[in-house]
Length: 102
Image 1 (cartoon, one colour):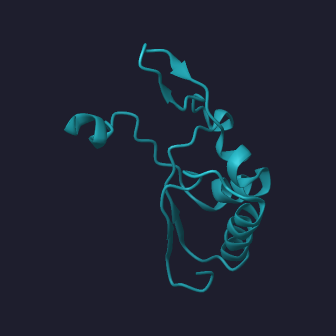
Image 2 (cartoon, one colour; image 1 turned 60 degrees about the horizontal axis):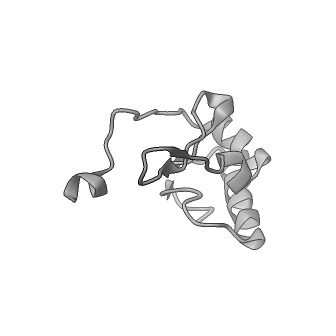
């Protein structure tokens, strides 16, 4: 993964990361950062430092459920490197296709 021409990390932080997984993600991001290799990462995680509200979802009664931030899941160092090496593309108007299918 670290030496791929282009790497896509899809749905970054979607699952609860074990400590070794967080370390592996940080190592991959750090390697690609240091070697100026392209990286595309997608995530539904919030990032208050980037102006994204922290919401994990909506309860059946319509209230916002608090969620974890990108930094909490992948670590502050990895998050910092991601934001330095990547351009953030916000997609607030995109609906969850799973909800639409119901």
